[in-house]
Amino acid sequence: MLEKIKVSIVEDEPEIREGIEDVIQKSQFFICVGSYSNAESLLDNIDKVEPEIILMDIGLKGISGIEALKLIKKMNIQTAVVMLTVFEDDEKIFNSIIEGADGYILKKTPPQKLVELLYELHYGGIAINPQIARKVLEMFRAKPDKKIDDLSDREREVLNLIIKGYTHKQVAEKLFISPETVRGHLKNIYRKLQVHSKTEAVAKILHSNPFQNK
Image 1 (cartoon, rainbow, N blue to C red):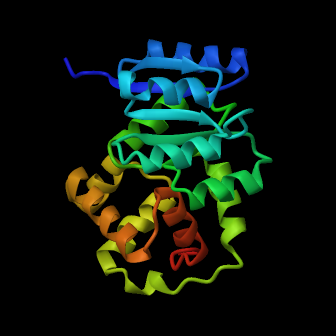
Image 2 (cartoon, rainbow, N blue to C red):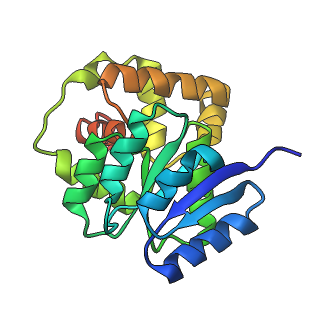
């Protein structure tokens, strides 16, 4: 049996925090190794619980979600940080992109979808709701980027399918390659786009999308 992926949760609303913890604990893939109402408690315990994924409320009191994200990224540990957000958090979403967040999930995301997004993230995917992806696109529309031209034909094929919502496995099946090869292409794409997070890459890709209307 595979070892479960360790997840910590930071959310100051008890009902939401307990609901997410319940979803994580019932999943066959994940285990909750810490559930906190503030970032300070997470930071005090992060070395002990060693989470592989942190679900972080973007609007925490005290140390904010974005400040906590910055501190965690400076630790240089193998932990993905996904921001829990509401749809209206435009400025906070943009700021967390700059600080290297690994994903954005709406607090109202259905349990099964939450598990799917976190599973994809752990294996090299992108944890982002379609609604948030569209919002990120809007925030980057005023920032033209020509680096999309540096991508190879195969990388464009992979992106075309990712943008359409295919999973890594589905992309692999469609292009007759392995999921590992798909992840390799995505790593090259992030490098060529010179981005620091998967979600920033999605924003640039969507903004410069050469595949629309095809």
